[in-house]
Amino acid sequence: MRRAMRCVSVWAALLLGLAAAALTPPARADGPAPVPPPAPRAPVPAIGRAWPVGVRPPVLRGWEPPATMYGAGHRGVDLAAPPGAAVRAVAAGRVSFAGRVAGRGVVSLELTGTDLRTTYEPVSPSVKKGDEVGAGEVVGVVEPTGSHCGRAGCVHWGLLSGDTYLDPLSLLPPWLLNRGPSRLLPVLGVQLPA
Image 1 (tube, helix red, strand yellow):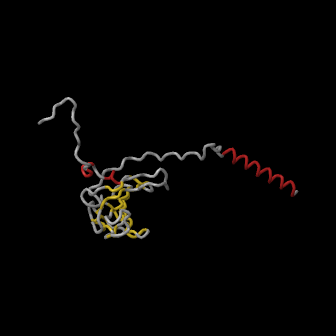
Image 2: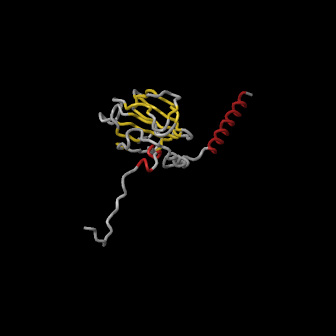
Image 3: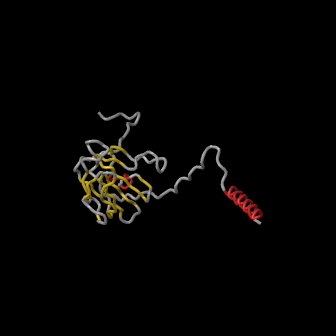
């Protein structure tokens, strides 16, 4: 009886293994199957009404999204800002975090009426979790240490939707970005005025 039970158990295990193999997709010769790209998301609404620092600060390093979730890249923009400069909320929202992360001051705001969240670092916060802030309201000052931009200082400004990083500059409307005047090129064959 034991021998018959053992044979049934072996056959059952064999059949379960065959069934599992039939349900498993075949291995690819060139490596693992590619991960499908994320579904396209709607454009970020240009709801910003103020720069985080200054009037039109130089962008020291732009947004460079990583190729993979854990890949190298720059998940925000670095804006030139000296230590002690006021850091302002880009748009109205609620403070979801104000404290220290890895030795740096960080302020995070959930923007009103959206699924977006902005982050600012290194910032010594003047707000606390739960505070409601308006566009342009000061949320802290640039810390003198902790910046990866050196002594001149900068603020790293990030934008997230859930766990997905987005370009924070997309929050600002064109009139606020004011990327400079248009340049007209000379028209060939037309004489220039004296």
